[in-house]
Amino acid sequence: MGKLVWISIVIAALSALLGERVVNFRKRALATRELVKNHLPNCVLLKNLEDGSEDITILANGLAFISAGLKYPGMPTSDLPGKIYVLDMNDPNPIKPSELRMPRNFDLESFNPHGISVYVNPIDDTIYLFVVNHPEHKSQVELFTFVEDDFSLVHLKTIKHELLYSVNDIVAVGVDSFYATNDRYFTSEFLKGVVEPYLGLPWTNVVYYSPEEVKVVSEGYHFANGINISPDEKYVYVADLFDHNVHVLERKEDNALASVKSVTIGSLGDNIEVDPETGDLWIGCHPNGLKVLMFDPNDPPGSEVIRIQNIHSDQPLVTQVYADDGHVIMGSSVAASYNGKLLIGTVFHKAMCCDLN
Image (cartoon, rainbow, N blue to C red):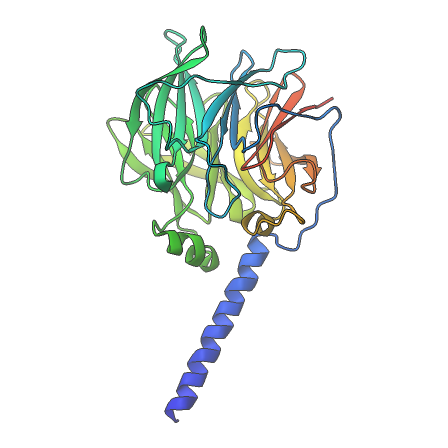
């Protein structure tokens, strides 16, 4: 067989492989999915938030913390540094969040906040705010305390570790310990941004961090994204964006995680919030991932909110609570409920508050 024939065979094989990978990626990204609107009553866009509200978490007293201004490769971004806002959900009309005052000893110019988590110390009620930060697109975790008297943050420390290399989201389990998701395997911008999505390999993971120990505790995710914990702190939930499901993991005494099951949600799940009273999971989702990755203002990415009830039962109830085609709110990344209201945040767009009833 001649050399040219071999070259032709190799080219044909590579073309077939590339074509199969593209088809596979489009399938995992739900690239052909079109959304039917499913709106909630009395939805109002929040003020001050124009550059994203990527993650939201609500305390038991109704204070909602919001991370804003995430600069994510491939997404529309602002030149302004990131910010943290707080919104009192007990307000009869909660639509105007307040920007938290950042400490002077903190590098605000490079602040690029992503996932957040709050831990309330049961001993003295101190509120600890954990923020995933990407200065120059690197990954680290900032630990703050929240001073409610003057709506300010005190920076305690920056946490870096070689296992925390592509952190997406975080859930605090102590005053300086947490679980975090790494959403990529590679660290090179080209490899993780172009090659990895088309390979479609389940290589991402969950890491446990404490000052005494840092270790990978769960792996095998296509794109480990949102993470949260059950009200009794016995289970951890992880959203696998490209596998369209939420994993239920049991915590062990050594903080390792054991797989229990996964629940299919039919969408690209981003952040997870857990209702402390009912244990329901609220998930901000991307109904069509290709529209997020290849942003076109004339064909914007839609938004979807999924609720999972009775997740530990044999038949969890998965419900679409909200859906929009992107003409009201684009690229939903989080949903959090409180006292009959639902906050919906986005990667790079606005945020909204709706009535659930």
